[in-house]
Figure (cartoon, rainbow, N blue to C red):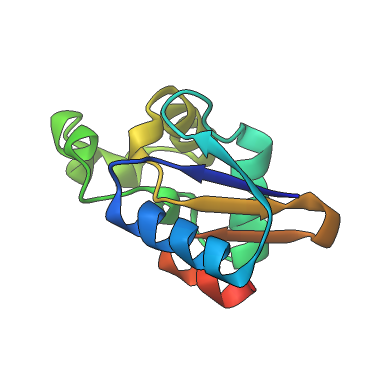
Length: 115
């Protein structure tokens, strides 16, 4: 089953959720603010999507601005970024979709290309 880490107030999360419903894809909605993806899942995203850890960050989030990460992010190591994301899940670019049985990992609008 697909694990869908989203946020109800996020437009992209709502669009992707609507897409999954229209395609008849079974999923389990997980509120990213209550149960963020683990470091393991975030590491898998980095590996599968061939992205940098900082690419997981939602740079338009208020948390990004509040923590003044624009200047700090380049100095942080991978583990520091992952810890920051787990502790501040609104920083994670969403939605995050994981289907471990099919080894599928996706994030943001690109999730719709997985199915």
